[in-house]
Length: 281
Picture (cartoon, rainbow, N blue to C red):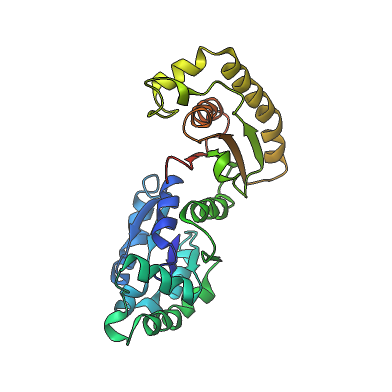
């Protein structure tokens, strides 16, 4: 997988998402080193079954125009190679660089940030045209972007990818979930001395919740539902399903349930990704 795109559009986030899917990720690899990759992959297929290379405008002088033909050569050698391209609106990119005070990689040869962005758009146009999928991050945050990458790349894998996500209802239900379960009826560790500052990943919170029959009952009922319907989604050739579990603050009950569901489902669905929205900012 080649990951490229405009600076500030989310390439690093995309690479992190691919790492979650088991990809061996390398960022900013000089094109001159690309030629050494095919023999290396053929010699160590199990180690490099999934590889993602991050390539952007920083390598322009070293042969960016060589990438499309190199991808063709890989396919001729029997290696599947796809290009994921990240973009965002000009105004969004300028705003992101202004807010973070990062230096644009092409700013050295441009008169201002806006010109640097325009130069990069033109420079990367051939890669965008070659991309199998163009992802626009203008209106997405890093968590939404990561899930979009999971969804896109997961569609090319064997088996169905399941994303289990905890969240806080007070911050809104995630827009892209297929199933939503509500844990707010369970006793809340937030009101227990010594547990408030912990999360649902802590054994003390887990043990406290599992003393409550309702917690185990809700967990069993959710697993019973998912055990009945996830296989039907898989039979229908669905490649990606998102299950959301929410509570008031998204820190204790929902996190506990997502962790428990992940452990219970992983034997049947090996491609499981866990995302605790409120714990990750």
